[in-house]
Image 1 (cartoon, helix red, strand yellow):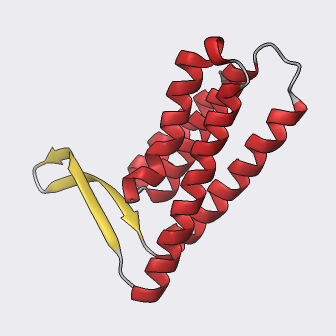
Image 2 (spheres, helix red, strand yellow):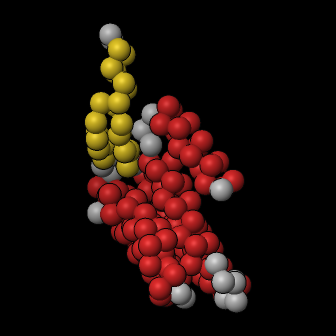
Length: 148
């Protein structure tokens, strides 16, 4: 469930960018459903963490290892993170819905929606990052996505 919250907007990005030309407005439906599903999972995670009070740390890999310095690539899920996940995914779901109606006559709507899902994915990475260095790296990627 933890990684599904993060990976659903990425799935929406890939489906919108690969198949958006063929399915047209269906890309809006797919990206919006992926983001809304991520919101529902975030809400259930918040409920679970509030009830149990657990903190979940997922160590993916060792990122930097120099002498006594070890920097691990981790995802961190606690009460504050889960609240921020709910807020980010809810606002992003609303933006997806609004953009679908506002840009309905735009020929590049599937591409825009896939970029919006990519932005949501990187925001979720930003919220769940465990260390400050990955936060800074993700912030630079977000700036690139916004410029592009």
